[in-house]
Amino acid sequence: MPYWKILSTFVRYTYVLYPIYMRKLYFLSFMLLISGSILAAEPYRTRILADNIRTLTIGLADNATELPILELNEDQQLEIRFDEMSHETHHYGYTVLHCNADWTPSDLSTYEYLDGYTNGNITDYNRSINTHYLYTNYQLRIPNYDMNFKISGNYVLLIYEDNNKDKLIAQACFSIVEPKVKIDAGIRANTDIEIRGRYQQLDFEVLLQGYYVRDPMSEIKMVVRQNDRLDNEVRDIKPNYVTESKLSFINNKDLIFEGGNEYHSFDISSVYNFSRNIDHFEFTNNGYEVILFPDKIQKGSYIHDYDANGRFLINHQEAFEDIHTEADYVHVHIKLIADRPFFDGQLYLGGGYNYNLINYDNRLNYDNTVQAYTKTLLLKQGGYNYQYWFLPKNTSKATVTRVDGSYWETENEYTIYVYHRAWGERYDRLIGVGRTYNN
Image 1 (cartoon, rainbow, N blue to C red):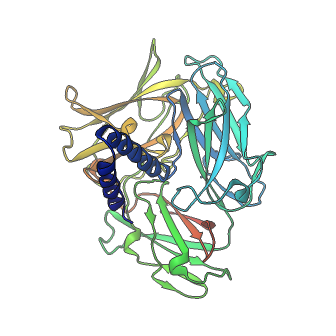
Image 2 (cartoon, helix red, strand yellow):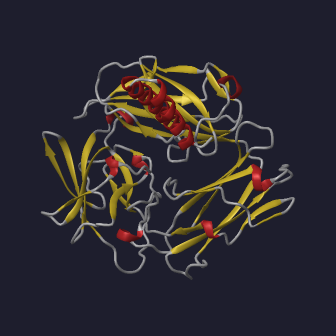
Image 3 (tube, helix red, strand yellow):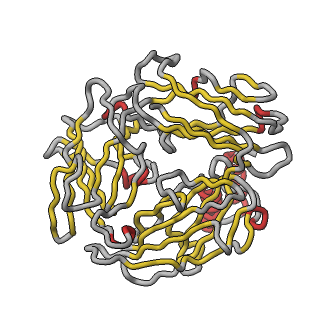
């Protein structure tokens, strides 16, 4: 029965059988139940959920800049780190949930996807040394002696405090792939929209390599991301044609992406050496203040620049032993010169440092006194990429064109995820991950 019919039936029932105060009580209870169900079905994202937590990172243990994707039954580990902004002792635990292709919780029970314990404690931590901002760095590696994974798919690591799973402080998403298929992909400038203009066409083929799929049109789920962005990811695309050996996604209009522009970047791994895009440093009662050169709305042709496609990396040039506990936190001041604010939408900062989320914390504010959008970020020392994402009103997909322009030459990274749920199965297997670059 549709949601609105359930609600209207409930309201009529309570109106007839209960006095006014009981109607209000039951109506409120019903709405809370519905709201809880809706929230529970929201897709998981890597994010921080507590004000005293900063710099949550998840990546391969031997390569922190790689996407958090492990191969099933291989000798690999993910490393998760975060800072709690004090030298006090906190007790953090974790558990892992299996998710569907859309990052909503799957219907599996823990024993179906985990070997060993279903919960664990984070016991590896170290306090910061010689830093203005006091913090404690916590780290965890999975899989580990206590917990391993049985099946492929999407997973989310939930971190909580004081053995209370309702007291979540962070969640970190990762994937485990069982490579059954191969992805052959490429990017071209000529699209159905423009020829060598603002867009990039992604073409790819899924080579089945003998892997059996009875009905590819209903059993296969595809997800494509550009630079690991969430707002413009493409889902539920269907192949243009299918053979026994491959699925072809060629000249698919759903796979035309805005080329955008290279990310802005800055390096604050040292407060003694000026890197590119840094105007000057100041030391105040709040610690170091880093003032970047103002950005401007781009007009003109594409200019090549090296970036990390949105990633960030913690680093401290003067560290003696451990960058994770010797790097300090600094205030970074970002400014975008604009004659007037945009009235048809909002401007946000996008990048891996904020987990590619679009929310209030990442929104820029317009300052009429300096005729510019401004934002101050408290960041741990290292190298960072960011972009200006304009979000038009009543949309969820951002555009880079409004500030930085869009060019087919821009070097972007595309990641292609292939999920399979055969008839009768209860979860989405991740059977292939492919990656291609425009360079």
